[in-house]
Image 1 (tube, rainbow, N blue to C red):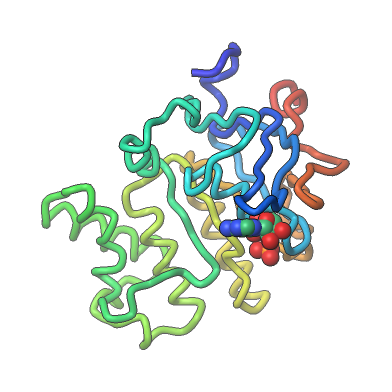
Image 2: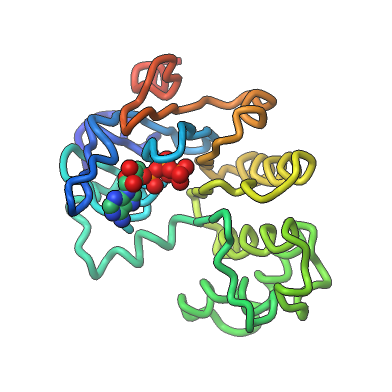
Length: 239
Ligand SMILES: Nc1ncnc2c1ncn2[C@@H]1O[C@H](COP(=O)(O)OP(=O)(O)OP(=O)(O)O)[C@@H](O)[C@H]1O
């Protein structure tokens, strides 16, 4: 655990985090912010600003070169490679191109995280159908992704991310391919999860979408956090 009395309320904590990719590309420089448990926030910035890299550091797909990252009370630097899968169970990840298995049914796609965790079949069935219901796709479990619209496919990806009820949900451009109405529907869905206690961080270019919502925003520019950062530590803890 990292020091500090406020750890128990913190879901994501970055302290002066830097990431340089092999080859020398600086992706993040001195990034500090906190996200409390139960918060929902946006992460924005131009293409190449470092949004995906920041999400990859949270999900331990990449590791930082400098500074400290703590997720759900765990100092990532101290998490051994063999324990990374356990940490990831606490994180639901949603991608722009949803990474669905096209040769598997909607049911199988959503069931995947539960199969990996070794759940019993009756429990898997119950949870998959509940997740489908939450994203408004009940009855489509036998469909294949190819039979669904882009917005429906995205919702299958969301159902897969929330099916094991992770306390943290990360979304990387979740509305990238969707029209404004569908984008809003997806954000409302995230709000529903947030209302039930899930911490949500959404990376997006879509400033229009952000402006229509009331949430805090962390803005990156060339790998650094820039002005008006409402996720600055003091404001998170005392705001
Ligand atoms: N695996 C990698 N190897 C080397 N450089 C990388 C790698 N991934 C990202 N980068 C570089 O790091 C910087 C930040 O990239 P990142 O993907 O985090 O930005 P982003 O804000 O998510 O961009 P976009 O909105 O286009 O997805 C960019 O300069 C990018 O070229």
